[in-house]
Amino acid sequence: MNRINPIALFRLSVLGSLTSRERLDHGELQQTIRALAEREYTIPGTRRRHVAEKTIQGWYYTYLAQGIDGLTPKTRVDRGQSKLSQAIQTAILAAKRDNPRRSIRQIRQLLEAAGTVARGSLSRSTVHRLLQQHGLSRISGSASLPEEKRSFVAASAGAIWYGDVMHGPRVPHEGKLVKGYLVSLFDDASRLVAHSAFCPGETALDIEGVLKQALLKRGLPIKLVVDNGAAYRAETLQGICARLGIHLIYCRPYAPEGKGKLERWHRTCRDQFLSELDERHINSFEDLNARLWAWLERVYHHTPHAGLDGMTPLARYQQDLSKIRSLGALAAQLDALFRYRVSRRVRKDGTVSYQGARFEVPFELSGKTVCLVVDPHSGAVIEVEDEHGKGIGAATPLDALGNLDRQRNKSDPTDAAPASPSGPNLIELTYRQYYDRKGD
Image 1 (cartoon, rainbow, N blue to C red):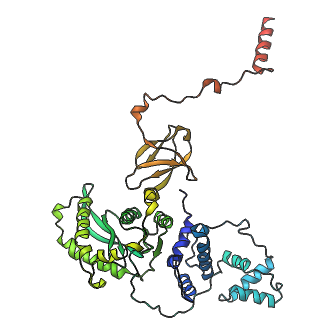
Image 2 (cartoon, one colour):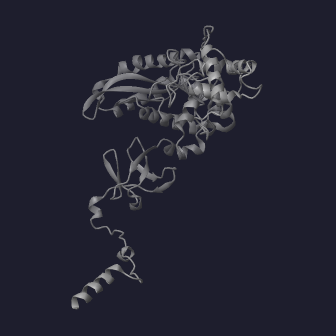
Image 3 (spheres, rainbow, N blue to C red):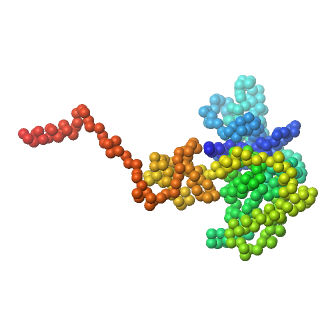
């Protein structure tokens, strides 16, 4: 399974909810794109923090036509080179520096009016690339009206899930007490907890483990709304959501839409579950989670909710079973979608290492770099792939004792021996000349 380009994943995350909207009201597209352009981003490969409206609009239409593959950047053969003369380049840069708010259209009009270039001869993309190379492509933002915020609820169960982490109690783990983190995925329309688990961390791996169980139990959500934490920005999580057709949407800093419902769930968990927990029975995360899941299924999901007009989360969820996207054929591929791929160089003895353990791969790969397909939760190495994602063999745990008696493939000595020369030979000529003279 080929890796999704990180730039494509970033562009998809910028588009956010736009990719899942079936219908946009008149003017809503430009309004949304304008709001996206005003945000700050961590853009891969650059120190810039903003993305231009025209760029976002181009990504949007490309995604509609080609999907995530269309968001993968294409390398230009003339990258870094400008076809403009030095005099025209200087005029463009001077016009922009003189008035940073000048648009490309205004710059072209100015140069045409001054007779610097012929009318219609200067393309917008050429000017844009030149300005971009010199860090002058962005127009400073203007004042905007205060953002209108309204309470909302998803139309049906499975339309929107929220993901978040709550700090939990200290739990015995690997011989010591460690802090637990409650990772939850919460359905907006029904207030049902798709899945939740206490984990020893709040890493991408912890979040992906909870997501996998939620998908198996509750099907595929249309949108998954999360915060901007590093774990949620992980390339692995973005790739999983992209392949499953889940629109991964990041809340803006200090404006976490939907967090009110999640905070209400966290408060309920603290007040009704943690406050009643007898920690004398908790010797591991398995003990804690077993009690959490029993309480969820027997109590929380069957308790009338004020936000649902007295309905229980489970009853509200079951109303929309026909609208929820099932995994279908994807269920058989789910394990493969959640696997990690790590690069390793094969030693001369045909082994590679992963998490302190050694594995054997086909000996023909010695000295080559391969990709190990691993189950990150169990640490098992499933198979070996080449750099293009093609399976090239299995990886098995090293059996050093068994290798003592194992028959090895050996090279044929006759293959390595040089062929006997049929023509003149320097060694033989020297030998004869030396001993012939010695006999004299």
